[in-house]
Amino acid sequence: MHISRRDSLVLLAGMGVSACGGAGGATQATPTPTASVPPTPTPTPVATPPAAAPAEPVGLNTLATARGLRVGSCFAWGAPGADRGSFANPSYAALLKRDCGILVGENEMKWQAIRPSATQFDFTRFDAMMDWATANNLPVRGHNLLWHQPKWMPAWEENHDFGSSPSREAERLLVEHVNTVCRRYGARIPSYDVVNEAVTPADGTLYQTALSRALGGPEATLDLAFHTARAAAPGAQLVYNDYMSWEPGNANHRAGVLRLLEGFKRRGVPVDALGVQSHLVTQGMDARTGIAAIEGEWRRFLDAVTAMGYKLVITELDVRDNNLPADIAPRDTAVADFTRGYLDVMFAYPALRDVLLWGMSDRYSWIEGFEPRKDGAKRRPCPYDADFAPKPMRAAISAAITAAPVRS
Ligand code: 9MR
Image (tube, rainbow, N blue to C red; front, side, top):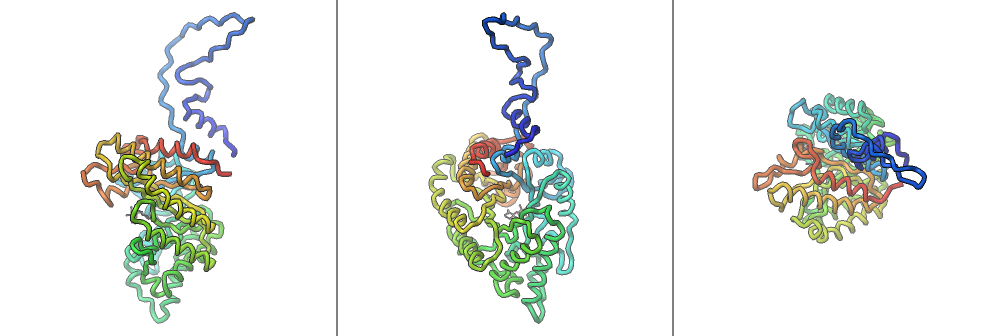
């Protein structure tokens, strides 16, 4: 692994070592006395040096790179000051630049965002985000080419008139969509969530949409999306992305995802990786006990996925702080412990290289709007708080990365 001078300086700085070789407030190394050299007189201090500013923590992606891993986050469209995880907010942008080696648009590539009608595309927002990412040398994951649930497709699609040859019209719409997006961004998008959340959590069956009904069923629809993406973005990693997680209650969801992945293999569909979203839910104050109860089944799932040859990507990591007190210090500690335990399990799989957070700061997390805490305390799901200060969860992520087996 090549580490540039800049990286090694950043690493040293993060270990509390300054670039000029001193540690802490010391300005001169004490020479080792030898028999022939008289002891050096203590130098008279000339002036008290100003207190050193606390060292910037080493960027998470810098740490990750040294292990053959990569860290990223979602970012979102929003005017300065808007309540979004926007690159337009300089504080948020600084976190993205320091900690991330890859980004993903939280919402702006979805059909609802870029396809206002059957005949129109609108890339205004996503283009601006891509331009910002490119200007900062950050690749972007594509999320997503098909969120295969009626609820998340645009209303026009569910009410579309597929005409007298419905399968041909459905095929045309989908192929046009995938081709238009993939060809527009080329190599700037090295990985796509081609299909998102196609499995019904309750029973593991596949959702139907107007598109899939017209096209001849969900399998045919998902397969077509992947084949088209492979042709239109031949260099990109193609991912099936879903939220079957390790908490109790997800067994049917996991079984459905396994069946889908087996089907892709059987049919020769070009799917490279499973996107494990990782919207975690804490299981109580004692993370170790909580994890011990759920880890075995989770590993069996991951073993089955990786045995089929799929890579793993953590695509949307955050933590819902359930079953925890409102008091911030113990709550943050429990979230951090749970995150650490999860990442330790995940990093044991060499098939995993990329870890993307679903937001760096609590300020912009979707969770507060989706499921506020019953006690009214603000959710704290991300590595930085609402004022962009690092939390124990950030330290847990950096410790897990540092302890991860090195990928070659
Ligand atoms: O975080 C996203 C939120 O802002 C949107 O309102 C929502 C609907 O588009 O999608 C959220 O992101 C989801 C992601 O696209 C897919 N996995 C689950 C994420 C959280 O719901």
